[in-house]
Length: 578
Picture 1 (tube, rainbow, N blue to C red):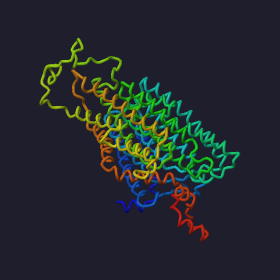
Picture 2: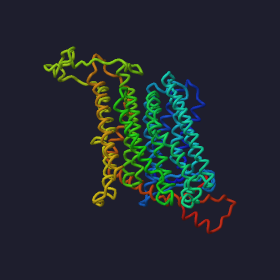
Picture 3: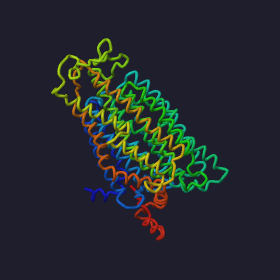
Picture 4: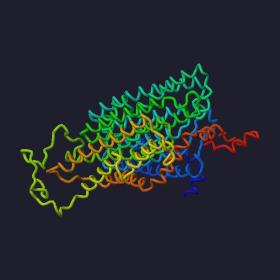
C-alpha cells in the first residue's frame, strides 16, 4: 500500500482538498431522504482522509534532513504566479490532527445530530476541505480563500439545529469573522502593493531587502494581518464571542470547532517564522514580544473564565481560549526548543478540548434526563448533607436511601463518562501521567533551559519567562479546581437520577480522541523528536523557500526547455502539473 501511495506522490498532496470537496459535491445531489447514504459517504471520506494524512506525515518525515518538502504546482504555473501547495512536517501534522477530529465528530453525528438540519454532511466536509487548504497553501491570497471556505461552512454548522441560542451566538460569530476577514484582505492587499508578490516563499526572500522608507508600511500591514489572525485565534480582548458560539453549537460541530483557534495559531507560526524570522533583516522577530504579552493576557482571562464556568460547554470553550493563549505566549519567545513543546501541547490540548465538548453534550443530557440543555439556573440539593448542613458522619458507606454502597455494580455508561471526564481533567489541567503534562513540562523545561537540558547553566528565562511559567502553573491549578467542582456536581452530588444512556456511536469518538492522547503519551519520545525537527525547520526556513522557488513547471509534450533549466528542475523539489 505504501509503495502504491508513494507512486502517487506528489499528486497525493492535492487529495486532502479534493476528497472532501468531491464527496461534498456528491452529497449535495442526494435528496434529504438519503440520509443514511450521506452519513456513510461522510464517514468513509473521513476514514480515507485519515489514511492519506498518516501517509503524508510519514512521507514528510522519511529523510533525516531538517525538512522534507513536497511542492505541487496546481495548473503547472510557476510558483510566483500560480497556486502552489506545500507539504512539510507542520502541515502534515495539522492535517492528521484535523482528520482524527473529523472522524470522531462524523461518527458522533450518527446518533442523531446530523438529522437536526439540512446539509450537515456537505457543510462538514467543506469545512474539512477549508482546513486542509489552509494548512497546504503556499500563498496569502489562497490562504484567504480557504479561510473563507471553512468559515462559510462553519456558519452553517453553527446554526445547524436552529434554536434561539444558536442563532444569537451565530450572528455574533459571523459578524466578528466577517470583520476579521476584511482586515485580512486589506493586509494582503498591502503586502502585494509593497512586495509585488503573495507567494509566501517569495515574500520571505523579498522582505529583508525592502527599502527603508517602505519598512514602516510593511510593519503596518503585518500588524493588520496579525490582528485578523489573532481574532481567529481567540486572543484577548477579541475572544468574547468564542465561548457562547462554541457551547451553543451542536456537539459534533463544537468538537470540530476545537481546531479553529489552532488555525490562527498555525498561521501565526507559519507566517511569523517564515516572513519575520531571524533572517528578515530589520523586521526580524517583529511583534514577538507583543505576541507573548497578548498570549499571557489570554491565559489569565481564560483561566478566570474556566473558574467561573458552571456549564460544561462553557468550561470547554474557556479551556480552548487558555490553550490558545498558552501557544501564542510560548510562540512569542521565538525559541525552537519551546516551539517543539508547544507543538506537542497543541495536539494534546486540541484533542482534549474536542473530547470535552462531546462529553459536555452527554453529561448535560444525563443531567437533564435526555434533553439537550440542562436547567443550570436551578441549584441542586446536596444529598450528602442533612437539612441543618451537618455531615452524615455515621453513613459513609450508605447512599441517600440508606442502602449499602459496597458491592454495587457501576453502570458501564457512568464508568465511561467518569473515566472520560477524569482524563479530560488531567489533560486540560496538565497533570501527569497524560500528554497534557508532557506538553507543559516540555515548555517549562525549555523556558528554564533555553539552550537545552544540561547546556544552559547560568541562563535565565527573564521576567517574561517567569511570568509565563507562573501563568502555566496557575492556569492548570484553576482548571483542576473548576473541573473537580464540575465532577462533584455531576457525579458525586447526583441523586434520584437514572443511569445515562450512551450509544456505542457516542462512546467510540471519546475513545478515539482520548485514546489518541494516551497513544501520544506512550510514544512521547518519538513524537517529541518529530516536533523538535519540525520546530528546527520552522526557524531555518531556507529549505522551504528554496524548495518552492526552485520548483519548475513540467514541460508540455511539445515544449522544449533549456538544458540548464531542466537540470535546475531535477535538482530542486518536485513540481508537477495535475
